[in-house]
Image (cartoon, rainbow, N blue to C red):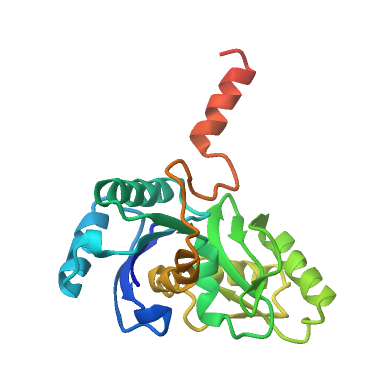
Length: 243
């Protein structure tokens, strides 16, 4: 199985090509990533082309394209989905959206406590998803720092996991950890040592079994939006005021 994966949901842009012979351990993998802001549009196609050339693969030889479904940057998610859908339409290769939060948590799937992948949602809020040993403990969340900390503690206590520190990972983890320390609520949390690890390789690992089962997206599928964009909010406000 040959897969292309890309994620533009945060300031960490990453793209990877991965091969899993007989859906077992990967035999080939390569990843390019940039952790330097949200200028992803100009990087997507050059990075994809470079990786395919390095692998010696044609686009049509892929089994699927995996795209980070968010939540995250509205612009970044639209870039990623436009790219995946365009490549799919032009090559006939199907695509599949995979949670970006799960991808950021994937390296810690063996951790016994609560794993908390974090993406900065702006406005002093955070997108998150609580997991334990790879299994979901919650839906996607959009919460302030203290509310997220309280939610983590409540779920950890209910599941008897409160003796193990909750592990914060993802590109928003350090900021959240600092904010919690300022609020004197940080006990019970620890920061992952490699919290900003690029997610594209993890998307491939998470998506391969779903691809093998034929769980692919339809052409009208889209990203995980937990909240409305500022543009949509502005339009709704204008309609509400009779503008």
